[in-house]
Image: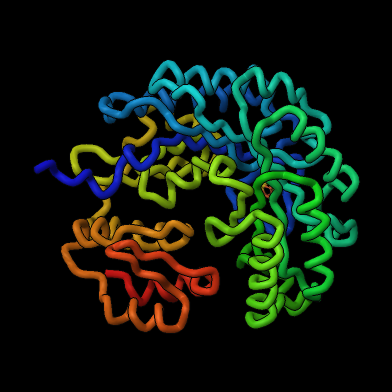
Length: 390
Ligand code: SF4
C-alpha cells in the first residue's frame, strides 16, 4: 500500500508570483499595493526581487522546477524585457523553470501598444493578461483609465499575434449598468477572440477614492440582487460562446487556456511571493508556511539587503487554517476539491448533511469525496464555504 500524497504542496503546482508595485497612474477603485511610478529607477527593486528569489532556496531544497511565473501588480509591463529577463534568470538559476511553463505578464492596453512584444516573448513571456476593464469609453473614463475602447481592442489584436495565450480583464456591475448594456459589452469582448476572460464585479473598498465616494453617497454601488442577475447573465453568455467559467471569475476556451498559475492557488499548490507586499505559501517538512513581504518598496529592498532571506518571518499555519484555506480556494474552482484532503488536515469530517442541503438546492455536486459547486452555487461560494468550514 502506498501512502496518499500530502494534501497540499508543490505536487499541486509550483509557481512564482512577482509583484511589481508601480503604475503610471492610480485607478480610483484599486486597493492593491500600488505606488505612482513617476520617473524612479527600477534597478534596485529588480535586483532585490532577484536576490529574494535566490534567498528562498536554502529553506526549500526539495522543490523542483517552476510550473508558472506570474508578473502581477501594479503594472509589471513597465519593466523592460531585460529587467524581466533578470528576474526570470534568477528563477531559472534557483529553482529551474519547467519546459512549457506558463509565464504571464499583466499589462494595460496602452502598455501593450507601446511595448516591445517580441522582446517580451523572447524574454520568456508566454501569456499576456490585459486590463481592458471596459469596452465603453464613458465607463473607462468613470474607472479612471487612460485608454479607450479602440486602443483596448487594438492591444488585444496585437497581443494575439505574438502570444499563444491572452486574457482580458473586464469590470462589470458598474453603477447604473443595465443587463442589456452589459450583455452587449460582453459580446463585444468575446468578439475580440481572446481565449481567456477574467470578469470581476466592481468593488468599493473602504480606503479607495471609490470607497470614500460611496461612503459619502456620491456614487451608488449596484445592489446585491442586480449584481447576482448580472453574474448569472455572464455565466450564460460566456458558456454559450464557448468560454465557460472554470472559477468564480475566470473563463477559458479550453483547459489549455486556463491559468495554470491561478490553478496552483485553488488546488493548494505552493508559490513563492516576491516583490513588495507579495504573499506566498510554501510547504516544507509537513507544514505549510505563509509569507508576506514588506509592503513598501523601500522597506522591501532594505529587508532583502539586510536579511538575504525572502521568507524569514513566514509563519507556520495551524492545521485548521490550512484546511479552511484548502476548502475556500478549492470551492472557487469549477473542478472542486477532494474533501478527504480537508479532513486529513483538520482531523474532522466535512458535514455531509449540510452538503446534501446544498445539493438539493442545485448549488453543489458531491461525487464520492469530490465536492464542486455549480455555477449558481459559485455565486454563494463564500457562504457555502463558511457553512462547511472546519
Ligand atoms: S493599473 Fe491596475 S494595479 Fe495599477 S492602479 Fe490601476 S487597477 Fe490598480
